[in-house]
Length: 509
Image (cartoon, rainbow, N blue to C red; front, side, top):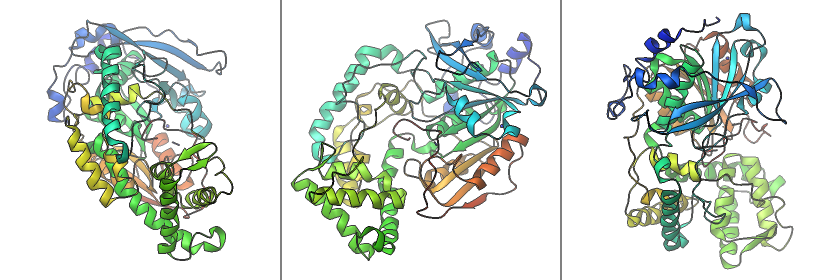
């Protein structure tokens, strides 16, 4: 979205330290963590004792950022089998005498590459934090310069959430994509999971010679951080989780919560916009503002609105602006443009300029592989009809069918997150991708955590956008001291908010 120097451990010490981590179920881990046979420390020795060879990351990358390749087992139940590569990066502290350890990071997704995250953190972390850490980035398994997963899907197939009106076509799309993935990457796909990425992180910890790791994760990165804390509680040092996922909702219910929270955001937006009618002219009461928007949707259903050469029907309009209602000023500006486009005026500015979409193959591997999904298409049809009636803005999209309906069963049960490992959660009140309700759920499940809530904070990703939240996070990363109680920071609704340059690619980002 958008911290005491450690003596390098001898090999025998690394393996002894590893026993309660990779090689055994840790104290406090969920019962589900015990369901898969764990690799022994001896079996993992080739990975945990590997020598990392650091070199330049690329001609366009600062020389201070160094990259290496970490070897990990594709399947941790069979570590003597196929190996895959994990691309990693490191930006060393410039004050080694003040060094506390390493700070790993993840930018979100699922599906976000993280090799350049140390550079982003270097731009935003204060010096007192940077002095304490080597900043570590990595492309998670299946992504970027790590051994990639590619299903060979077309541009038209590269969209996850689709409306009810095309449900029958959506079923065909979902099965086609699942079949392509199984054919192209079936032996690899089922091992691209959050739990295995957390295991990769612990192999990296051991290969770096560290007893513990600190961590910054945003959006999906909070789920990855929480799973690491569950599997390796003794290895987790200072964890900052920015814009948090609800671990119990991973993953179908994380999408469905978008529909309920979008309705709340929409109601707030109509009130704010009505109070600013002089500026936007969308209506002087919440009801009038709501009618203006739904009139645009109805108009687009009768005759598509052309925005920058792209025709949008009503579902397209709803999909385009759903997330914007969490940032009231942006939503008002965009609806003004859509209204003008519907009336034959200006063509909506940059509203519909589609960003370059990342390939969703690895994203689907994670969201389909972390936990089972319903396998009957009629379940999705019923849920879409019901949710569309209850939550007309986005219910049908969020409950719709996905390739996960036709996916192979996960190789492991979902990870139950329930521990007392210390952590700091930072969260905006109005977040379109990981709403406040999901962060509060993460807070309950991480019983050793403290939470910073930005009251009236808007947008996805807090760090580097709110001075109060930043100060709390910086202090924790620099000193290891959590606040004595949860913290509330303030923001002004509708103020122009600096976008975090710590992006979270993928459906949650």
